[in-house]
Length: 92
Image (cartoon, rainbow, N blue to C red; front, side):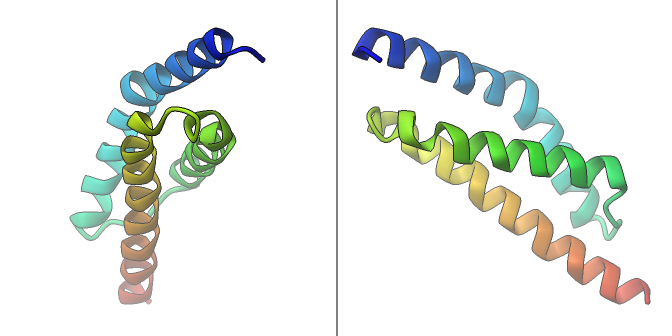
């Protein structure tokens, strides 16, 4: 894949991440920060977002200006799952 094609793929994937995925991820984070547990569709959505982030890493590594954004999404995923596990433990 040439550099221009690679940049196009990265741009489209990052735009989807920013405009479609990130708002929902932030809503899920707010939910767990408020002590709620994740529902099945939340878990499925987070798995999809995490898989997307992992899948674009090879392309993003060629464009280091995007590494910080993808890293933040991966950290956000980690924070959400940790808090959700704690919330689940607290409800038992």
